[in-house]
Length: 221
Image (cartoon, rainbow, N blue to C red; front, side):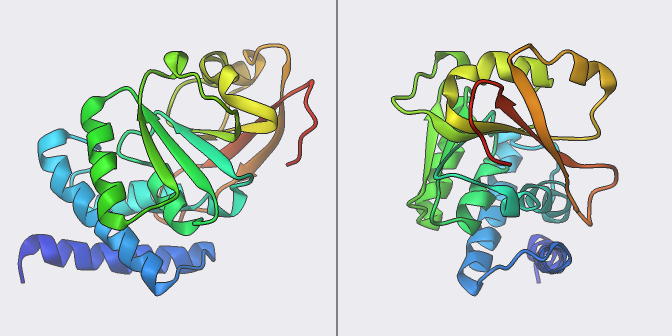
């Protein structure tokens, strides 16, 4: 068996065990899609440097399972993943939530070309890549969830993404533990309404999903 195949087999075991630990239900078809996505990510990563993790095992531990940890908290019909990079968390979430629409925004053309290829290979009908800088992207309709992962401090996220949110929508940032300073720097007009602690069995350290709303909106946690 070739080394890369052995690595992907180990990664699949880690993925399935992690999903069980997080109590995330995954069908056989979704498992196949996640496995193909992982294969494509490892393959393209050699030439395009899509993630800092280079092998299937590390990508699964540090990225796939981390992304899937927020699947139970995805609300609304239209979700935009800002600064999606290689499609994390947007692609895994689109696989696990076929009834919702995911828009994957990134300014890096190599990464959006990869996302286009992934979308076609996986047959994802609920996923759309967008090659644009966030401040220049003007959607015709706002989003129910504006999602970021390792994007920027909260204050910067709110500044650059404010125009993307629909009335009653939520900003959701995947973060480590929030510092008091970062919390205090959140601009007026916004409010942290919930901090969901994420259980990611393969990631060392604290992980949270920070939910933020505009104070003028009616919202739900």
